[in-house]
Length: 96
Image (tube, rainbow, N blue to C red; front, side, top):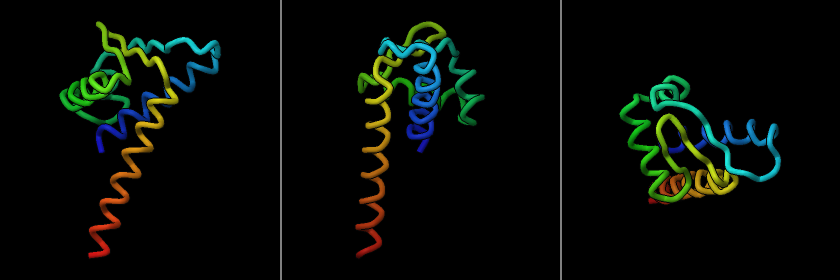
């Protein structure tokens, strides 16, 4: 899904930044929604909607031209949980 793609890409960015700054501090990505759209292949409108969903869940904080990731591991857990849920849905539908 678009949310999975965006969450995975943000977690990847956070992981790469974390190597430079392993103190456990929040990672601030100085990217516009247009930048993120170009990096993910999603439309800017989709990026906007999905970023706001992630923000509502407390996974990211949004500011002007910035995306703050306080806990990249939590973002990855959210991504994995969503993927497991979709797998179980597909598996149970196939079993019917």
